Length: 254
Figure 1 (cartoon, rainbow, N blue to C red):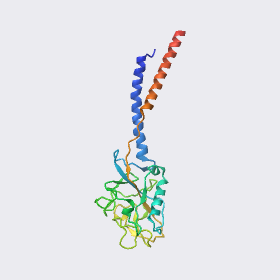
Figure 2 (cartoon, rainbow, N blue to C red):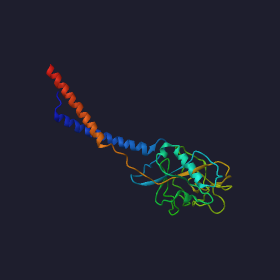
Figure 3 (cartoon, helix red, strand yellow):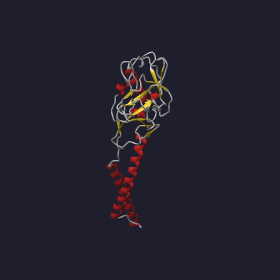
Figure 4 (tube, rainbow, N blue to C red):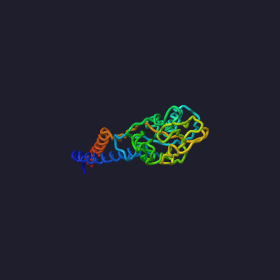
């Protein structure tokens, strides 16, 4: 049977529909694996739509003493921990410690960003934002929706965490910030105010730190390009024409 020009056009149209469907599926699957559950951490909460903003929070797998009085050193520590996971490093965002020294309060250190929700690395909603203005805010003194709980590798953690902070994100009264003799400690697996203010401990002991990202935006999955689809269709049509010519030559020799 000979493949006519009309057949090639029909063939191309049919393959075009198939390739478009496969490309759509590839985009959907690719978007899921790279922006939702990527490895063992969720870097885009599945409940959010394209264009929405959010922040991520985790508890460090590494532990530290709290003898340092410089908040920037704690910020550097959590940034380095985040960058140990290539998926978090690829977000190209800032990471700051949810911690207070005697001179810098946690709520100031991480930035308030009203209306930007916070999620843990399990994709769970934690707080409405990092302000004290909303009842469900991170520093409202009320319970979190879910504990911070997950470290940068996606493992659950019940570690004590250096915060140096009261539940309102402040560090007064008294010397309770990091760098003091007995800073305030929270608990990573708690969703009550104990997440940030559970007890105090000697600063020479070791505990984890909380890390909060900068503001992130849910991006649309990158679509397959029309050029790639067109190239595939041309290749298919040329193959069909070669098959037609081969059949014609064989027929003429018979």
